[in-house]
Image 1: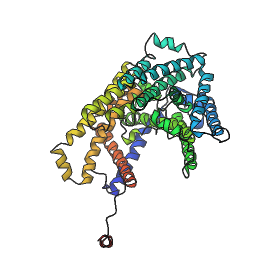
Image 2: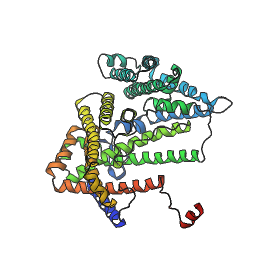
Image 3: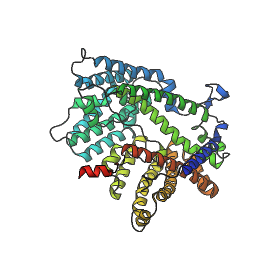
Image 4: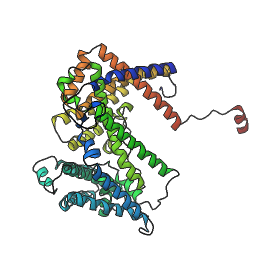
Length: 492
């Protein structure tokens, strides 16, 4: 319901105006200053926010090292793709593996390589049994060893040397290696004739662009694409890759400016300052935290994806923005167990398993438990509500009303659901104290004026998003043009 019929243009213009004014008003926190800043750029006399370690690591502290490693991979892969040096293009995954292994060896040392290979050998041995439940158990057990003592400390000893990025590379490389081994093991269970080789696993795991920072490209897709002998590109593919890279370069500059001047991550850590902000500023700050995290993730995905597309791979797409009401789709465990996500029991099992893996990945603690519980509950509650309203008499009433009215009613429910998602995820991005303060101000202290006004602005945003989705759906799947009288006569 509500996808074919557009709302009146005047109504959409009104939504746009309300949303624009509300965002400007909600952004008043940028006038304030906070403690976690240091001298950086000096435009407008603003100091630089340095609270996002990941962003500073990628684009300031270790920018040159990361660029050097990825550029080396691109150049090495390009040279080896020339027929003179590599007469069999289907073997290029072996070249990727050799460069990736060498880069990891130089960066982390031979003992770290030994640790990674030991986990690969163990999980490969389990994969030969071809029992999916055993593959899951073995993979999660391997992942748990990096969170539990004494295994955690013992394995950390395999990383030689000492530099600021070592912890990130150690846990990133180990964690993503185990997830890739799980993907390999599950795909091996699906293979009916024989098994994949251990070399196939090593080539998959040591592809450098994905090794330390992900994303996890499932083994079946990587194996098929990396061993494809056809290296011809589609028309304008290189042009699209170039535009893609330039767009992400521009996004990096935009995010850096926002990160520098808006103090999105620093201010939520200053409770004294937060208590002085208006309800609108708190709501805008909470929403901006989620949007900032999405944009940052999209940029990091984009950098890696650009490199992998040069290698003739089709990498996983970046996560969708919270503004698009994204609810944990496109995840391997979630989609594998939940399938179509329309069965209550399967959805419950899929969300429990997904957030169990996520909790283990992030590291079990009180904050992660709370975040996982509420997100798991939210996904299931959304399905329960949808199932409830699909029953008579609600479904009958909706079928009788105009599509535009149905869309408006659904927009109200989506606005409430949107703020549930915001409050759940602010827990992980900031702190429990910040999430509690936002919830109290919007639900109790600010009720009814702040609560209803924020929901109304959110409703306006939801309707604009749904209009964009409606237009995109019509472009992707245009309705068939009804035959004319002349066409009918010809058919007869």
